[in-house]
Length: 124
Figure 1 (tube, rainbow, N blue to C red):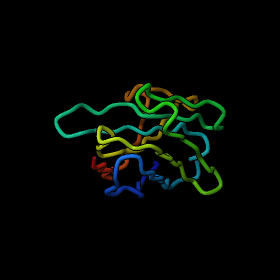
Figure 2: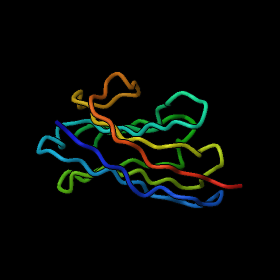
Figure 3: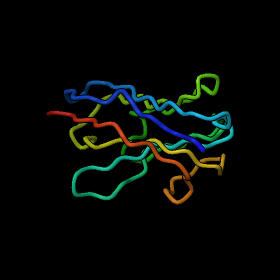
Figure 4: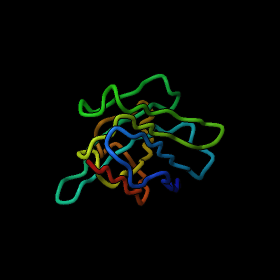
């Protein structure tokens, strides 16, 4: 069982930066791939970024590539999402997820555990 708690969201202006954190419980964190997904009002949840269990594979949605960076610290059971050059269209609830398929995936179906999410609001 893995429990995930996101933090770091907030209200920022366009072009600002935020770093989201996702703290995981459980001794098996280091074996799980981790992902970030987001859901804007009235829209479906969408993939943002993912990282393999070792950190050597990273995946990004085209909409965030070059602006967002996913990383993890297995010693701290934490995954991060550094978001630079934020845009109003990045406004959403951001969820982290853990998947036993440790290589990482863009597909929500590959993730077994989900956090409750943290709100990110970007004003223009």
